[in-house]
Length: 473
Ligand SMILES: Cc1cc2nc3c(=O)[nH]c(=O)nc-3n(C[C@H](O)[C@H](O)[C@H](O)COP(=O)(O)OP(=O)(O)OC[C@H]3O[C@@H](n4cnc5c(N)ncnc54)[C@H](O)[C@@H]3O)c2cc1C
Image (cartoon, rainbow, N blue to C red; front, side, top):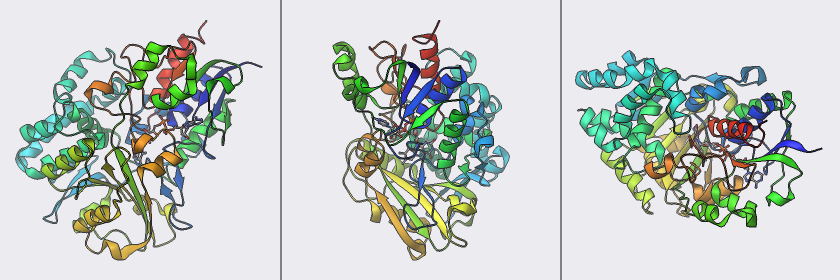
């Protein structure tokens, strides 16, 4: 029997594409190379038995912001999102921390009076319209909510380094903004890096930055379970080597990045399209670490214990220098480190009284430099005594991450560089981002708009394109 659709890859976007098609009554089968579903949204006992670590994605602000994921009955399929009391904290060398909570008023209490006023004026209008804003931000480039987007764009287009210095007076508020923008892996002096900082900040106030009870795998498992309930099939442990080997289907959606797609498609690709696709750029990589701990991290700023996420890097100058270095192929001695401490809020992650900790720093694309010492030194800087809590550690170099998931090319977690030139025209065209030169074959990974994150919107939009294209009529 000819299937309506085959999806290659069971990451959040592959699963989202399959669910969208199955909901429209189409027959769909997903092939996944790994033994489990989830792609970069998986959990595993990376250190010791009984310690569950998120191998990649850990924080689900984008899942909660996603119009598509919010429309799915994932709670009925086992997903529970847990909100830490604070979304994130940014500790500083003086022993204090900037703490961002869901309430704007409570967040403002921790900022100086002048910055509090500016912070409120910047965030509040967008938080009030956050549903419309996320609808526009998580779609392909279009004309949804034009007035709101024009207002947002005025700030978003600016470099994070520039906006932080113009908007805020206190160094600590500027540092907090820099830590947010650095999620993008793009140098903070580049245009449009403010867009990333603002999007994440608005999400912190609008929906929070939750973790998934039991680990991020629970989110992927819930998507897979819902897909099966709609009649969709998932075949794991099955890496697809070429499009030619696939059973007959009316359409194929590929949750893979351009470099892999060029290999899979072989000579079926038109040469012009192949040329444009081969010019697609990948960004810096990450060096990932996880720890099993015998106690919570002893943060010097006690309020850090209330935050799910920590941004370590001190001042705006230091964070900007680190991000500049990794983009331009250098390793920084004091890298910006992203930390998540899920077991403080989810007791299922570790044996009683024990804890897990998750972190990564940005490194040059494909870097083989061991960052263990540098990452632990950054944590120790803000939490003296941290090293004494360590029971076991896991370290994943960019090449290890790519081995676990072929989409993480050179350690690039974003499916391709996300600077202004490539964030909208992803992978090759603003106008038909999901189509390829092969009729009925679509791309649906984070290499398409709206890009990186566990939101499933790339898969959803690609499936909509297939439904009105090759599956239409
Ligand atoms: C270390 C790290 C931390 C992150 N942290 C966060 C976070 O906290 N919050 C957040 O929102 N996002 C985070 N992200 C980003 C987020 O995980 C990704 O943007 C998201 O998972 C992309 O989904 P995807 O479906 O496009 O691709 P992926 O999740 O990469 O899934 C692709 C799937 O395709 C499979 N595949 C590839 N090739 C083949 C083939 N030939 N045949 C069959 N199967 C194949 C892979 O095995 C994989 O399962 C993080 C990513 C990383 C790597």
